[in-house]
Length: 119
Length: 295
Image: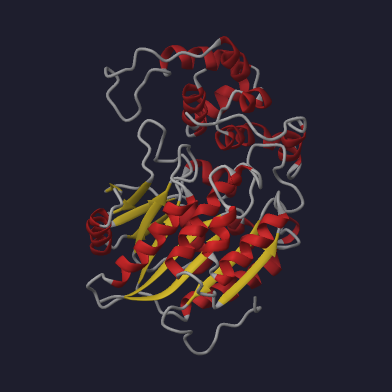
């Protein structure tokens, strides 16, 4: 499990308007590109000072490529990061609060305790 | 020495700015009541005539990230730019710019370290809505210098609730020992029960109204013992998955003092989460007494 890397994807995409659009329109391609080019970038450091070891599991890759917020929750991705990015991508297609409520309804079967989000 | 003119604890609701500035069909039905409550709350700060705002909040994965995550951080800089792209995008928040009070920040860092808090610091901090929401609600002219203090209520492992209470007590003591002839207001924001990104989000009320009822009573009465008896890192998962933000209210209870009742308490039951507003006057309530509902 690489909860940290899932969070890093959500965090770095959410803060970049171009990446938000790219991930909305081409999720599988964006995840593939990001894992190759960005996953090992050490934030706030020179490009040459990269990490060498970060990669998604197949399950994590599928959850991101499928825009599957329920799977991301169950994998322990930070719920605030997922929610914020998914609102940015999909709220525009719905009426007021419709998307947020549908997002919650899709998780109705999940009960406490929720998956651990500690990284 | 400085005077602590007011201690203020509040929820920080990023939707207030848009709700209060919208008009016509875009204006939500609860906006007028919300604005009236905020104006009454704002008067409690105005009457305290503060010179400096010591502001406790929490970065929401904006500048602070999991590769380098402090538990408690003090901003020491002459200027703080504020609000982020994703807060403009989702909440319509404006970009802001606040002056810093470096002398108070240096005092808190030095004395806080000596008091046993290994405080992190930042000399270039872009602050987010946990600090700008109370500026918008309580001091919209944004004309006073600030010292932001960030707490980690977001990324486990977090400090335990007791540590937040202790930090609140320490910040109060340090503000009072600052060798400056200034009036300091300590303002901190957190949450009552709250769910973000889970099945209980965006309901007709906060996810746990019974927790909210008890929490308001603990805060209004300064009942730190009753609060600590029920609240732990583990217990805070039950009222809602983002309820660890309540620990910033516990910090403010520490700043207000054990058993000290709030001079002003108000709440507003909204969809998604309950709003709650508290003011204490350590020097006694300035005249005239704040208008607004009694607790």
